Length: 434
Image (cartoon, rainbow, N blue to C red; front, top):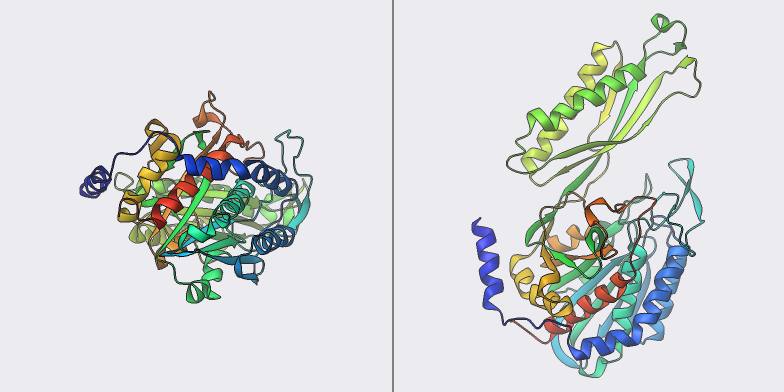
């Protein structure tokens, strides 16, 4: 409560915002709107999985070089691209980030530029789709880059543009994403005083912007469980040990970890199974079943407790069935909680209000989705906000969510995101509200 009151007080102390984007921002954005739309549609039609964003990275690097950006670097953390815009006047050093990767999802949007791309993911053929909206993020940030480059002579400060691969996670056995970008030195070569990012979001309508101070998005961890039984004919289950029945019991019992073992009156916790694989024929009980899933938390103690509880459930439920379980919880490095710096948030919210008007800026609750933007925000103060994606008049709570094969982006979000980020950058660089 005290944290919320502090943020409200900080926001209240700032000058009252206007109800529309600055005329300068509108003029700058208006010149790039058509290209932002074209970039987004092109990238949407040609999606690439994490650490494989070769075409997208080439498009980004070529455009940044054409705009005269300095220190354009490629191949960071596999396919990442960074570049620096140095303004003609003194000012802060900041970073702006967009993610480039798509998901192993077969698109069902019905768009004329829908993806028909395919790839292999975890050994299986899959469709590939920008089901999370990263195509929009790339298009918006390229538009912001072009708009700011056009006023380089009068722009205060320096801006690092980050186009990042593998936000959704690198392929098994590979490193990637924000953590690897940092490990390869992007904040050593250019140390910003703040970092900004955005995400299109289905739970907001087009024209709306969402924000939250402090903890905003959950920590995310992945788990892998393999239940080992003994193969037998389906007509003689007593001749083996059935890992499918054990796995089913495990899934059901695991639901009590959140419902009965975590104090969710304090902070939310989510434990979800995303895939179960076992067997190949209708009348053969297999040797093993694999289960993978995710745990989302906002507190380190609750996170570690969930890990321990899941290990306990998996091992002991399997043992009760005469089976055994090999449990990796977590099985990879996860994403930490995404935290918006309270002072930076208070300073940034008036810019969002300028961009879309007070009534269209929404203070959001905790978001159980995760973001590896969190790694940047652990290094320097960060502010990450949401751009509405669901068409006006539709119930955003019922719209196909990010990661759905039917995820639909109202392209008004491109204009809103471009203007919001431009307003935010210009206000910050000029010291508005400082």
